[in-house]
Image (cartoon, rainbow, N blue to C red; front, side, top):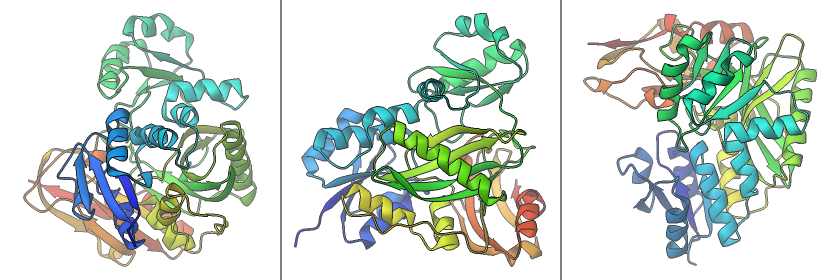
Length: 400
């Protein structure tokens, strides 16, 4: 019997597990992006060199190859492409317009405001002078971001107008549509919520919230260095956040698929949905979720893209204490070694380096600066949070 064909958008380190899983599930796998040397492509049956953000070209590939489904895994920029192809080829999908709203920060903030979600004051700009005119109408500090980038690239926290021009110009270099957003800073109480979820026929049937960890001394302090599970707030908070996510999914008429969360709770327990990506998370979030709950989010993502029934997916609580950590450097140089403190070695479940000693490495300005990854397991929540908040004491990248 002829194998069904699935088109995988991207082949980076974080997307490789989806390509391997699709092969294990018995599909003929075609991978595509503009980087032929990406590691995932060596696992696919066929590689096509076309950018995953070029909707029309990817649609041509999909029709020419007579694919049966398309997967956008762990990639914000590719999500709209996948939805566009699906709508044109009558494949199962979330609505293209809804995916576009979730993928562009200015559209998302506007949608949240119109539907009475809590949202910081925000506005999008194409021109620096327009941003300067409005700047003093915002309460300081503000966040300035590209509306359509990913991996925390081009994100800046600004305390006064003196930083605006440089930050604006930098953010614009990371925006494909050459547009940025300025929004008032939301001060969080506790950890920012990360993690993934999955809806079936519009119902959020599974979610696995995590604590997001940042490194204050990092060259870009807005790039998460890892996540840890379970999210350390009472069950009531989990349920309230779940309810807000469900309300959003319903309003957007979302169907079946995976989501990645970035959510903040302020000192008054108000819930702010900062980002809801219509795709699986990077940073090995689906892989740790499987360790923690037994639920294979990668498999369900592929099943949904291929039109298979996902109604057997049910909520599972986290068992144990788990985390992922992105090995990184804050400096440019030649990789000499990665030093591990003896105590942390007992926590490591998986450890993979993307670079080898002698390679040139770049600073951790965005997720693309990840040098390697770890999955860790701990004996208690206190051990997990203490170590994840101080990983610089346990893992150090040595450069020449």
